[in-house]
Length: 327
Image (cartoon, rainbow, N blue to C red; front, side):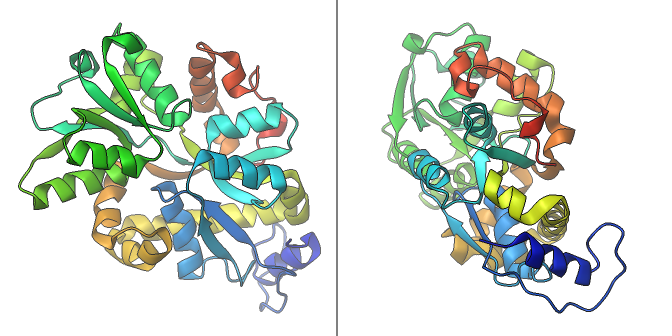
């Protein structure tokens, strides 16, 4: 684990610690910092931060690794293996409220969920009535959001045929092979589905934006869907200066991603195990941000309250207090 002393020493020498003048870098972190995330759009920022060297002054041996499903994520956090990881924000709130010492550093996307369907076949959520829809990860973020969208359209889950898949890629395959009429996909899988269909001479489209429907439900189109969470131990090891410097490095990485999506996609493609053209074309639809968690508190509260309407246990029984926000 990265020690606070070594990490903050690196910050000061890099001129990144508050109240410190710029000096040549000399210190190195005691142990490599590992950033974890799913093979999804928010991880582009973390992978770019590592690939571009944005973290070299504070964690020179930093690396990025992927987790594949929510069960792996929860196991990694519970065991302490995942000190810093991209998580669905409600999961972070749930773990924090259960006393597992998880805190949210930032929000990395303001929403990246779409109903993807053959062009012209789906116009809104209500038009899904009677159709078969692939939804990944039952009882996790995509499903929880999808069910709220159904409620907004006065649909019950029994009004359509929901086929739950074990992963977004499986949901995409079900759509591409015609086993479902539509799929509820995150980016970059929505982009991947559209591109792969076009190669086969078929036309898919982002028929419904979850973010647009969310605005009709809550008054805001912002869905602070995922962010970077840290364990209590890593938070203590890094300290306030270390967390702030990590935030700054991720902000710089996001600026690079937005300035040149193609270059960023090429840099992170192998790490995320996704084709660079898919990543590059998905970026504009991914609503990527690197906003401090405390700055997103109103949107997070709106999201948590909406999810808790179905079952308060989703967020651990209550809204998290201010200790939840690492920054």
